[in-house]
Length: 129
Image 1: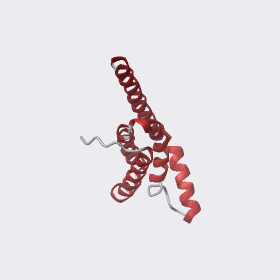
Image 2: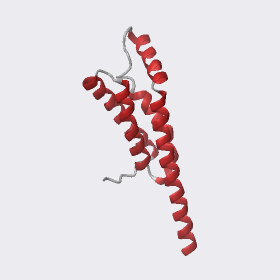
Image 3: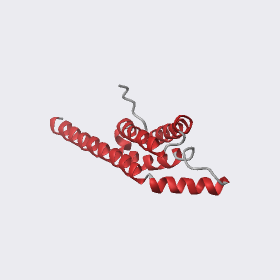
Image 4: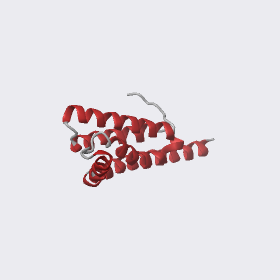
């Protein structure tokens, strides 16, 4: 498995781009299924939290909800022009909040575990050195 280390901005751009592409793919293949979009969101959250570098760990739980909203644009109901699209986006965010919270929780837990391991590793190195 690749082990890239993304900066905070790189992690945000990765998550944003992947979620937007998955939203487009969801619309093409599944007719804009919000459930499929939510399920696809969870592994993207985990990968973002795993691939961000140690000094930028706290950015992962912040960028994943933003990416969820950005990726929801192609999936949201688009009846009625711009206001209809905006209403579809707000409705999608409200009805899919469980997926949004779940993905953010996954990213947060992974970040906390990685941070604890990083601190413990630094303490051991300071004790030995």
